[in-house]
Length: 500
Ligand code: BES
Ligand code: MN
Ligand code: ZN
Figure 1 (spheres, rainbow, N blue to C red):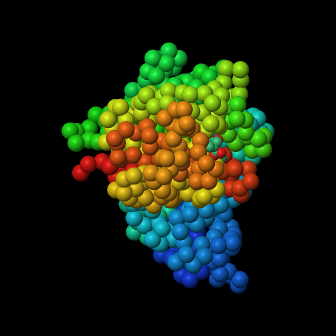
Figure 2 (tube, helix red, strand yellow; figure 1 turned 120 degrees about the vertical axis):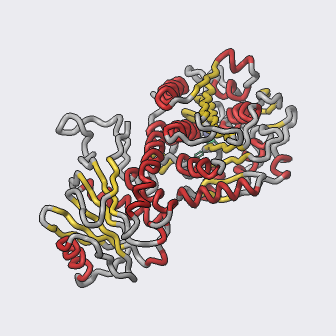
């Protein structure tokens, strides 16, 4: 659906395309070695212009023949973070497109944030993703094809820092596959609930499975009832679109005896009205993003399979629409989940944990070596961490360290939050084993504690509360919409889990 531009790696002596953008620091010389003489002249002309400092808010442009050449400030070299570099790349791609570029080249500076496998792969993912737009529902522009304002940017060439061409070429195909996975997760996440109901996501998952050689299993209706998946059934009951539990299975042909089995579970509430405990109207439209955990998990399976990673991956996506209706589950109801535990419903808006309870317990039943779960679970996590990081919950310090390493490699931030016995205490039910909502404060912690009751004896499990990072809201400055958070992070984690 998305159609990211083609990404290529170009040598420094040959800047392809109709536009070239270079970045430079306030406190460093511009490295022009190896560039075409005329181009180097144009860039140094910009660099020497009075008033040019290389501050982050500076941009200068000129023409070199037919090539539009621009210089962008990156601030002080010591201050450049992965986030700032990505912001510059995104703005650069945006501006080129706005100016009608068809083929943009980006000349990268030599810096720790552009060197080494992880940094290179961050850059190479960010560049095509900067051009991502969700245009599926837009009317065509004058040419009758491209949506209005979409531009014609079809190719972006990255010109690596001096001497780094081979390293960039080595990482390119993997980075492109991951970027495509992120774009896929965004497309699924951005699709409105009028189309993206559980059955639609099932169909998309089937198509992706056929495309990438994944095995797919889908539970619905009686099968869910026979297995005792009362949480998922309860949440889905108020909707005319019945719930599903999708499982995707990737068993690499190259897998050996010591190949670990990793489980990834994602919350797929295709729309969260709150149910009988109805949410207020303001911002409710953004609850179409309540399926982003499942979208990331499904896209991840496709990416891992298309990269042929030598691993065993099982993805579980519980899908339901949380609607108020005469058949809806209600506050006070008691629901029995797949692992036999009963839950008293306090608030039908605490639905994510109900569908995850069944999916987690099923995943753990199938004996994975480690389990990662991602969900837009609580507003409390957004209060705690804002839009900058997902909340990480795990009882396992080694797994926390692995995920923190994957977070740094991917640039998708997370921050560890506590999982203490007191939080479990606060989720004990009055007339059932558990209740689905606890006290007002610390709501992200008690939600995680609730989930911990469905993983049995597995210690290597982690929950990521992605409520603040799964989408960019209308009130934020960047491009609003699904981010695909989790695809890059989980791919890095999985790559690091490959034995040998
Ligand atoms: N999907 C929401 C959480 C959410 C809030 C995601 C804001 C993204 C942005 C979740 O199902 C929910 O409604 N959680 C409740 C739980 C409460 C009723 C215990 C919440 O956070 O208020
Ligand atoms: Mn809810
Ligand atoms: Zn929800």
